[in-house]
Image (tube, rainbow, N blue to C red):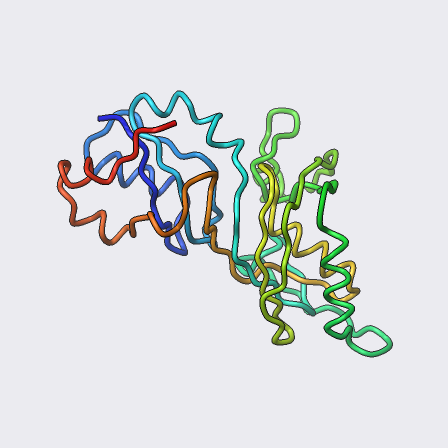
Length: 228
């Protein structure tokens, strides 16, 4: 069987967990995904089945959209809520107001250089950064150019700031959140992330994992996409 399946990844599992589940349940030999979601993240995960696994590059390069929330006033070693959280030291002066927060967000729109997180799959001398970080080795690599095409605040309920973002491939929303927190002088970590679009695939067409568990192979086939 060949096709593209759009899954709504739940919180707490890896993208590979979803691939492994689909492979075992339906007996597929070739299953992959186009664009990793961290365990904390939910939303659109593009699953490639059969011959479509060979064209993963065309899907990986697509823009992504996210709904996210960052929490100000603390930092995380993994830059998200799954890491070790450290409250920031109090800063002199008043807490930044809404206008200041909006101004800082505006600085991160457009082409920017972003440092890949220490806990990421980016490789350094053949080793993934997260493998080194787990051993206590933090490596600084060259920043990468990414494009934040749209960045809008949807809600401010201190210390949380919710926002939507449309970005190019290779963008880390964890790093974006930490950089915004640093620019505000408060520190921040990513506390919620939901991918709502990957390329042309939207969350509205995604199927939940719980629904997948009850599908027969024929029912799954009816859910597959075949266009490229």
